[in-house]
Length: 282
Ligand code: HPA
Image (cartoon, rainbow, N blue to C red; front, side, top):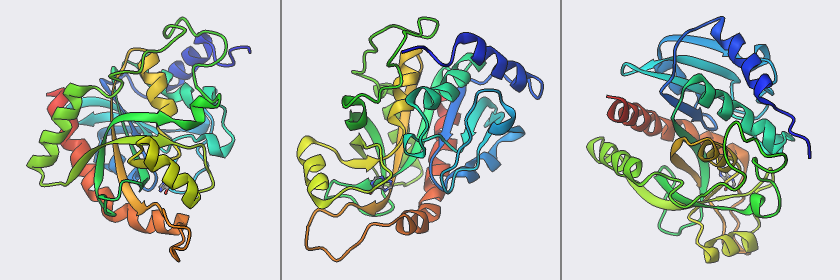
């Protein structure tokens, strides 16, 4: 399989970004569903629509704005994806990898990703935040890995190690920040399904059995891409709904439920990300 996005493609995208800003970001941040408002907290920000950046696909999912934002948070230079690309929109794993590689080549060494997720762990409540300590890449296990294909040696190796993918030291800092902010968190395992259909109850019980705490349709391709290019990674999942385990439950999981709950939870995600960036960058 040919590599669709070469180093030259990234360089063309970088040249475009550099027409607007010379900020060398230390931290890359990906904002999940309904969480775009965090970009409003960025100081001295420059916002570039994805459509103006060569080779960057557009973000078509609801709640995803589609702009690359550069500026500072608590004095730390950052680049934010205000809106992410999903496999369920029909983007290839490589297209989803592209903006992460762009953030890396712009200078970011740390990736912070947020997402909305369904709670599979029965101890979880809507509104809880999960600090992701590991993942199960269900879509990747069946072939959808962003580093598949011609080896992108200019970014990293053929085979990407993924133990300690979620940096233990960063998890400690996240937990400390959350405690200071009095935000309830769990540490948990994120299960990545391609979507866009939600899980059946049998699938939810399967995910529960194999050790998934929170399930969602994003983030893992970006995490793998980031680890492949040597970035450290921290991920926060916001539980917007509880996954339905029982076949006879009358509760129906819908995108309305996810988007209704996301804004209230967003406040805490925003506070936590801001405090975390200040802690790691200061
Ligand atoms: N399943 C998959 N993705 C999700 C969910 C869910 O229940 N909630 C938010 N994103």
